[in-house]
Length: 403
View 1 (cartoon, rainbow, N blue to C red):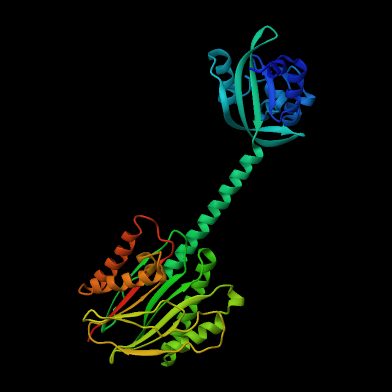
View 2: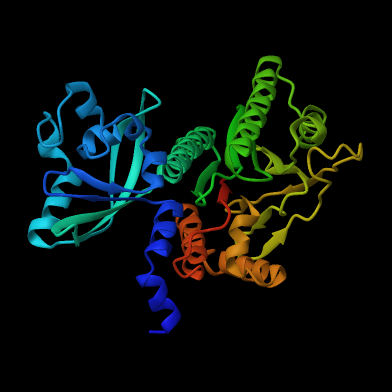
């Protein structure tokens, strides 16, 4: 050991200076927890000691709530037998079992008011004034513990909010396959760890027409879920109006109305959507696309048509036409609506290659029934992630036309 350090350790003046200026409370106590010496930080931590006997018991000097209320010394209150600090100090003295950064919490009187403190302490046996005593170092971690608990409370609140948002999102999805003549419907929804904004639905407009849509609100969490819910309510109101009046809204007209109702400067977010309408008697399919990934037609012969017509996303307010396109379905053809969270999983490094793999997967499973096809496509997407959770919701809605 260097001579300078050894000299400091042997210097009484240095040790007194050190004890009086460290932030930790230091005290020396005997087997009865009578305090024989303490430093200035002890007085700062336990201001009750200023008005107590300088050689009193720890409970009275520290302002322990039980010692003060019952006016009894350490070892005689109704709660002393449960005191982890007392038990630890006795074990240190009698069994030479030191404590290192052990935690305990207790209410102490501070400026005459009860205050909950969170403390850590370490103990060692020493010889002081010719007797074997206990050296106790107490660290005040009240501020740190309060911050930790506040973070836990906030995290719990966030978790509860996300769970509520998740339930909102699930409530907007189909609960069961609708019984609609001339179509067979299947879907699969795989939520990400965060709450996303994927919503899809299929609805019967009248005996001859159905409509379906899928939209994806930008962002995650409660705000995205609330916007998704509002959009869903808006679309439901249009659907109800159509059924009451008998007037069908064209896909492009629906998108125009959405763009007017959900401006970016009001909702601070945008969303993409594909809206399709199918005439069950003729097989005519009309659709309009606002910045969404293109819907697909998987023909009965295995060929795949990418429906590439599209306009800008909802909310930008460019006042440009979204456009509308029309195709004819034949018996056994399937219309596929989905979100980019699904295609991203087929190759996250190259969007173009990911789409190619996704399209090829659909053709690979073309001979399967619609519900089997949907499940196998999503299962392949899951397997390509190699056990990692999805970064975004994955949605796939398939509508098979049957004549």
